[in-house]
Length: 257
Image 1 (cartoon, one colour):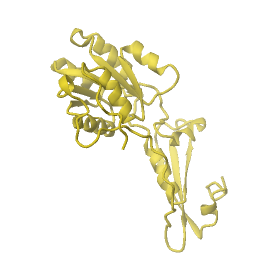
Image 2 (image 1 turned 60 degrees about the horizontal axis):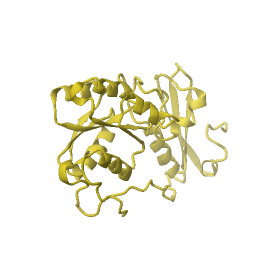
Image 3 (image 1 turned 135 degrees about the vertical axis):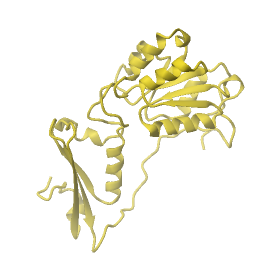
Image 4 (image 1 turned 30 degrees about the vertical axis):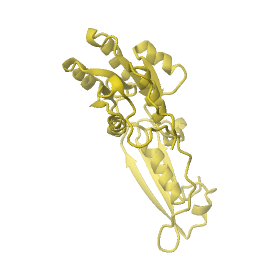
């Protein structure tokens, strides 16, 4: 890091007429230095435990970094455990303002879709009810929209206790999509609690998690999951896995746009 705060190898910043620096300081839990680089990766969080106290998907810093890079700038982090964090954005100024850099789009994970408005499912699966359990409303929105497009009924819960309340008051849930890394009550605990309920002892539970470390699939299955899908969720993979747990012929969903 240069005495100006940003990486001296950044040509746009080093050659800019001037550099705008903006800092945001928080009073949070702080982040160990060894994790500073990792924090800017998608789905990364300082507290990576499955029952972390704080919610969120871990996408904010990744998105912020990409936006700053589009503007030819850089974002840095200064933090220590227990001392809070300082995030600083450096942007090059050309003349009297910012100049947007031309960029090459990053590759996007290919998803499989059905053509037109054809339903993803048919027969007895259409109209089935899927309980989506996730602490982040953005994930809930994306998953429920996908399911409803497939003529399925989506019911959402933003916490483990809320999911259990729904299961205790409803008898029409056919399948559960369970996030693992949730605050207070993690997905392992929720799945175990579901399996303890006689009415849902055999219900299909699909674990959906960004914690893709070695052995995670086995941990999910041992906790009570019927199957496992890693984040970021691929549409085709999700629908293919769901199709295995509905008593119908697998849907025609392998045509790519």
